[in-house]
Image (tube, helix red, strand yellow):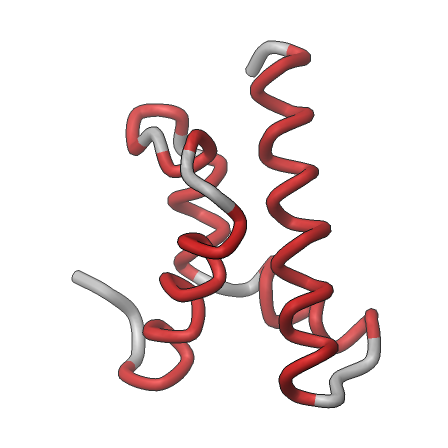
Length: 73
């Protein structure tokens, strides 16, 4: 993973964690635990998916869908 790709992944992770904290009253640790243990994060760090190029808002909606309906197949 290049420095640019790592920066994008980290930025999205930071923004999505803020969305979780604001919408769910989670602590920062809880939000990061949810993200890092999700299929969303697996896909975010899989460069072949291109998910790291999407907006943080899109990524948050993707994660919300996973949390509501389970892992996406």
